[in-house]
Image 1 (cartoon, helix red, strand yellow):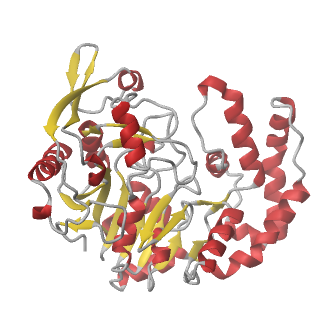
Image 2: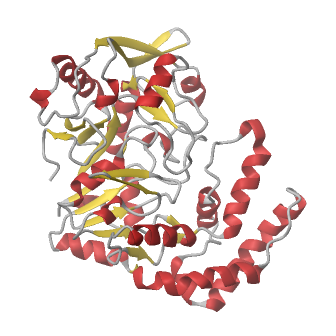
Image 3: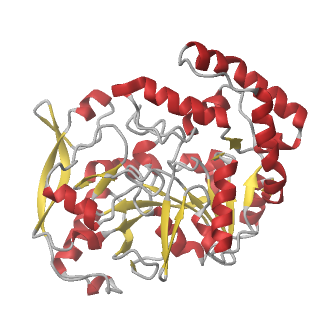
Length: 427
């Protein structure tokens, strides 16, 4: 049962799309198991760049079946727009499968998300405003709309009414907004039903049968470990579980079927949105990382906050995910620095701490303790093997591997599909 989980080991934006795409030609199914269109992946194939927000990266690999699992929240308008855009570029999207149990992001979820974030002011979380959090809240409150509800108008109407009973009270009385009409929402959602229906399936059954038949299934997480609702830098997190355990609940497969867990790790660190970030740089180095690395959110368009590599959070990601391997991305961005600092521990209240503190207050006040490694100036984008890398680049990778607690099995040396050094096969 060759089932692999591939996830972000930092705050997201580590290059999961490239890693998934690299494996896509060797796997039979690629599954998104959580998140929604707040997770952007950039994949470069030849001279073509694709920005994916909701669709699994495997949709770009011929012969691979892309799956949107039950743990994902789906905005139908975004889904259809992405499919249309790929079809116009000659990408075959006909194999896509969508779980009938996945929850729908409704227009009122988007409205609630935006007005709530504005209302918070300085206390805002940094949400993308796409309705992700309110949709997951509806799911937990048992007033959510699922994909399968689009095919029973009576049930759909009842569920929309139940959700808006409370939400309209909040919108009108707290936020001074106009109430949302039930009929208008139902009509809009029903308008998507026929277009989505060819893709809807019992994906839990499909995936388990595939694994039983020795098919290779890759579970692709959105965001990253430090944005996990349970294990991230709460409350500055997403509303789902990007960590490895989320693959089981978000796709409907048992943990005994997972054979490998791969963490995607950027050679430095970035994050989007608010929240603590110990190695964040506010100087020329931070701006250089942002510029050279093209650090702008695929989905949000926001500049990413940039900092040096943080081995403390890498070790944490190894622990909470049970990582078996790392895929190190964007090593090429560090070319040109004479010295490269790496955070090996934190200083909190005068004490050295080598593991991520469980206290949010302590993490907020953590100061990085750096070790400095020699850099390199040689162009590494043409490297095809580890030995092709300059000695200092090799030493940097080995140091990160030793600090992070799992072997680095692949290295990204450029944005292209073929600009990757594979040290150990993931399959």
